[in-house]
Length: 198
Image (tube, rainbow, N blue to C red; front, side, top):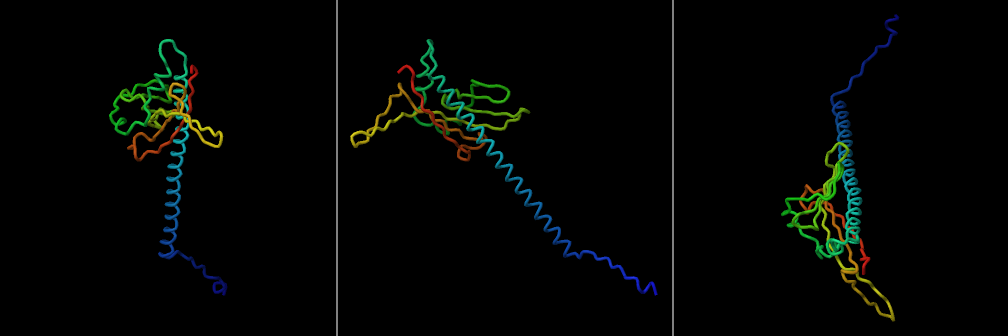
């Protein structure tokens, strides 16, 4: 009688359909997490590039400004570093023809190079602590005039300052330098520089 009262223990197993559906949900979850991870790595790379771009853009423009305004008996720095710049941005063909870069600043982490054929064209290489290249950019520097606007007696008047007095330094940084110019990210920076001697 005890054997009749004992309940039969039935082991339930998953059917093939339930197993396939469960594996499908698991595969979808893994694929979603992988896609999010890939997207976050790409966004992180862009963010790092924009940070380097802002840092190097500011540093390069202030380097130009310091060189232009430096007092030197041996050379006129305003002309050598300022008025010698082109009035328009150099094109992609100038970058393609540059094969040699003269390094004018460098250490274990960052190197600044200047094109031998087009002095307003620069290259920046930023490395990490292991020595791997994290960031490569190409910079174009050119000048434009400063235009002042005056409102007097009910009329607007403009005055354009001569390049010997002041100028706007324009800097475009495009990165990563390994890509063709049309596919790179680009940032534009400007700095007004006034001549001390005028």
